[in-house]
Image (cartoon, rainbow, N blue to C red; front, side, top):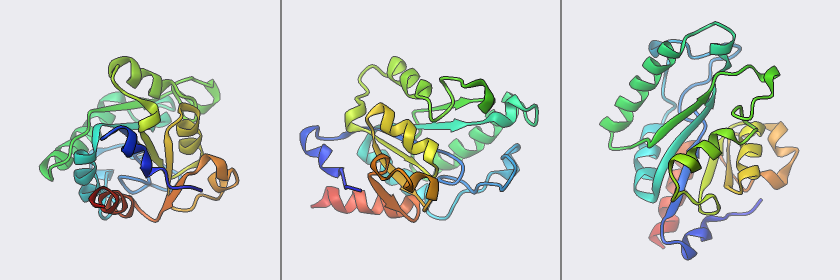
Length: 192
Protein backbone atom coordinates (compact mmCIF):
# COMPACT_ATOMS: atom_id res chain seq x y z
CA UNK A 1 0.00 0.00 0.00
CA UNK A 2 1.21 3.48 -0.76
CA UNK A 3 0.39 6.94 0.51
CA UNK A 4 -0.89 9.04 -2.40
CA UNK A 5 -1.28 12.37 -0.63
CA UNK A 6 1.31 13.81 -3.01
CA UNK A 7 -1.45 14.24 -5.59
CA UNK A 8 -2.04 17.63 -3.98
CA UNK A 9 1.33 18.87 -5.17
CA UNK A 10 0.24 18.87 -8.80
CA UNK A 11 -3.29 20.09 -8.21
CA UNK A 12 -3.27 22.54 -5.29
CA UNK A 13 -6.42 21.27 -3.61
CA UNK A 14 -7.89 17.81 -3.78
CA UNK A 15 -10.90 17.59 -6.06
CA UNK A 16 -13.35 15.36 -4.22
CA UNK A 17 -13.78 13.01 -1.33
CA UNK A 18 -16.14 10.08 -1.76
CA UNK A 19 -17.26 8.62 1.57
CA UNK A 20 -19.09 5.41 2.27
CA UNK A 21 -21.66 5.88 5.05
CA UNK A 22 -22.27 2.83 7.27
CA UNK A 23 -19.14 1.79 9.14
CA UNK A 24 -17.29 4.99 8.15
CA UNK A 25 -19.48 7.91 9.23
CA UNK A 26 -22.00 6.09 11.40
CA UNK A 27 -22.24 2.83 13.29
CA UNK A 28 -23.05 -0.14 11.10
CA UNK A 29 -25.97 -2.21 12.39
CA UNK A 30 -24.99 -5.87 12.22
CA UNK A 31 -27.29 -7.90 9.95
CA UNK A 32 -29.69 -4.97 9.57
CA UNK A 33 -30.00 -1.47 8.10
CA UNK A 34 -30.19 2.06 9.48
CA UNK A 35 -33.89 2.41 8.71
CA UNK A 36 -34.90 5.39 10.83
CA UNK A 37 -33.25 8.64 11.89
CA UNK A 38 -33.06 7.44 15.51
CA UNK A 39 -31.03 4.40 14.35
CA UNK A 40 -28.32 6.69 12.93
CA UNK A 41 -25.41 7.09 15.37
CA UNK A 42 -22.22 8.90 14.36
CA UNK A 43 -18.98 7.04 14.95
CA UNK A 44 -16.62 8.81 17.38
CA UNK A 45 -14.66 11.53 15.60
CA UNK A 46 -16.51 11.32 12.28
CA UNK A 47 -18.13 14.77 12.61
CA UNK A 48 -14.76 16.37 13.37
CA UNK A 49 -13.21 14.49 10.45
CA UNK A 50 -15.83 15.77 8.00
CA UNK A 51 -15.35 19.31 9.29
CA UNK A 52 -11.62 19.01 8.55
CA UNK A 53 -12.23 17.44 5.14
CA UNK A 54 -14.44 20.38 4.22
CA UNK A 55 -11.37 22.63 4.05
CA UNK A 56 -9.28 20.15 1.99
CA UNK A 57 -11.74 19.12 -0.72
CA UNK A 58 -13.75 21.06 -3.28
CA UNK A 59 -16.59 18.53 -3.01
CA UNK A 60 -17.56 15.81 -0.55
CA UNK A 61 -19.90 13.07 -1.70
CA UNK A 62 -21.45 10.18 0.17
CA UNK A 63 -21.90 7.03 -1.91
CA UNK A 64 -23.93 4.35 -0.18
CA UNK A 65 -25.63 1.10 -1.12
CA UNK A 66 -29.08 0.99 0.48
CA UNK A 67 -30.67 -2.26 -0.63
CA UNK A 68 -32.91 -2.20 2.46
CA UNK A 69 -35.17 -0.06 0.25
CA UNK A 70 -35.10 -2.65 -2.52
CA UNK A 71 -35.98 -5.33 0.04
CA UNK A 72 -38.99 -3.30 1.22
CA UNK A 73 -37.56 -2.85 4.73
CA UNK A 74 -37.54 0.94 4.49
CA UNK A 75 -38.65 3.69 2.13
CA UNK A 76 -36.85 6.43 0.24
CA UNK A 77 -38.65 8.90 2.50
CA UNK A 78 -37.24 7.19 5.62
CA UNK A 79 -33.76 7.28 4.10
CA UNK A 80 -34.19 10.99 3.40
CA UNK A 81 -35.02 11.58 7.09
CA UNK A 82 -31.86 9.69 8.08
CA UNK A 83 -29.79 11.82 5.71
CA UNK A 84 -31.49 15.04 6.82
CA UNK A 85 -30.49 14.25 10.42
CA UNK A 86 -26.94 13.40 9.36
CA UNK A 87 -26.56 16.58 7.26
CA UNK A 88 -27.95 18.81 10.00
CA UNK A 89 -25.35 17.53 12.48
CA UNK A 90 -22.54 17.80 9.93
CA UNK A 91 -23.46 21.39 9.11
CA UNK A 92 -23.83 22.28 12.79
CA UNK A 93 -20.20 21.27 13.37
CA UNK A 94 -18.89 23.20 10.35
CA UNK A 95 -18.78 20.43 7.76
CA UNK A 96 -20.41 20.18 4.36
CA UNK A 97 -21.64 17.39 2.13
CA UNK A 98 -22.05 18.36 -1.54
CA UNK A 99 -24.34 15.47 -2.47
CA UNK A 100 -25.49 12.07 -1.24
CA UNK A 101 -25.76 9.31 -3.82
CA UNK A 102 -27.45 6.05 -2.93
CA UNK A 103 -28.39 2.86 -4.73
CA UNK A 104 -31.49 1.05 -3.53
CA UNK A 105 -31.14 -1.80 -6.03
CA UNK A 106 -30.70 -5.34 -4.77
CA UNK A 107 -27.26 -6.87 -5.08
CA UNK A 108 -28.70 -9.56 -7.36
CA UNK A 109 -29.66 -6.97 -10.02
CA UNK A 110 -26.05 -6.22 -10.96
CA UNK A 111 -26.96 -2.53 -11.11
CA UNK A 112 -24.23 -0.20 -12.40
CA UNK A 113 -25.16 2.15 -9.54
CA UNK A 114 -24.45 -0.37 -6.78
CA UNK A 115 -20.88 -0.40 -5.50
CA UNK A 116 -18.47 -1.88 -6.53
CA UNK A 117 -19.88 -0.73 -9.88
CA UNK A 118 -19.07 2.88 -10.70
CA UNK A 119 -22.48 4.38 -11.56
CA UNK A 120 -22.67 6.69 -8.55
CA UNK A 121 -19.20 8.04 -9.34
CA UNK A 122 -20.09 8.64 -12.98
CA UNK A 123 -23.30 10.38 -11.92
CA UNK A 124 -21.25 12.69 -9.68
CA UNK A 125 -18.95 13.46 -12.63
CA UNK A 126 -21.95 14.35 -14.82
CA UNK A 127 -23.39 16.64 -12.15
CA UNK A 128 -20.03 18.17 -11.13
CA UNK A 129 -18.08 18.48 -14.42
CA UNK A 130 -15.01 19.97 -12.70
CA UNK A 131 -14.59 16.78 -10.67
CA UNK A 132 -11.27 15.11 -11.37
CA UNK A 133 -11.07 11.49 -10.27
CA UNK A 134 -7.27 11.38 -10.32
CA UNK A 135 -7.18 14.06 -7.59
CA UNK A 136 -9.90 12.46 -5.50
CA UNK A 137 -10.23 9.89 -2.73
CA UNK A 138 -12.62 7.07 -1.87
CA UNK A 139 -12.90 6.18 1.81
CA UNK A 140 -14.77 3.06 2.84
CA UNK A 141 -14.70 0.02 5.08
CA UNK A 142 -15.35 -2.80 2.59
CA UNK A 143 -13.85 -4.41 -0.47
CA UNK A 144 -16.69 -3.10 -2.65
CA UNK A 145 -15.81 0.46 -1.58
CA UNK A 146 -12.18 -0.11 -2.51
CA UNK A 147 -13.08 -1.68 -5.84
CA UNK A 148 -15.39 1.26 -6.63
CA UNK A 149 -12.56 3.71 -5.95
CA UNK A 150 -9.95 1.66 -7.79
CA UNK A 151 -12.14 1.36 -10.90
CA UNK A 152 -12.59 5.15 -11.02
CA UNK A 153 -8.89 5.86 -10.48
CA UNK A 154 -9.42 7.35 -7.01
CA UNK A 155 -6.93 7.13 -4.18
CA UNK A 156 -8.47 4.42 -1.96
CA UNK A 157 -8.48 4.55 1.83
CA UNK A 158 -9.71 1.62 3.89
CA UNK A 159 -11.20 2.32 7.31
CA UNK A 160 -10.75 -0.69 9.59
CA UNK A 161 -9.28 -3.97 8.45
CA UNK A 162 -11.73 -5.72 6.13
CA UNK A 163 -9.88 -8.92 5.24
CA UNK A 164 -11.69 -9.29 1.90
CA UNK A 165 -10.38 -5.87 0.84
CA UNK A 166 -6.89 -6.73 1.99
CA UNK A 167 -6.92 -9.90 -0.13
CA UNK A 168 -6.43 -7.50 -3.06
CA UNK A 169 -3.76 -5.16 -1.68
CA UNK A 170 -3.42 -3.30 -4.98
CA UNK A 171 -6.91 -1.81 -4.54
CA UNK A 172 -6.07 -0.34 -1.10
CA UNK A 173 -3.68 2.60 -1.01
CA UNK A 174 -3.88 3.45 2.70
CA UNK A 175 -5.48 2.04 5.86
CA UNK A 176 -6.68 3.85 8.97
CA UNK A 177 -8.42 2.74 12.13
CA UNK A 178 -11.11 5.41 11.77
CA UNK A 179 -12.11 8.46 9.75
CA UNK A 180 -10.59 10.96 12.17
CA UNK A 181 -7.16 9.32 11.99
CA UNK A 182 -7.26 9.78 8.22
CA UNK A 183 -8.40 13.41 8.55
CA UNK A 184 -5.62 14.14 11.05
CA UNK A 185 -3.04 12.58 8.74
CA UNK A 186 -4.26 14.73 5.83
CA UNK A 187 -4.18 17.81 8.03
CA UNK A 188 -0.60 17.07 9.09
CA UNK A 189 0.37 16.51 5.45
CA UNK A 190 -1.14 19.84 4.38
CA UNK A 191 0.72 21.69 7.16
CA UNK A 192 4.12 20.40 6.01
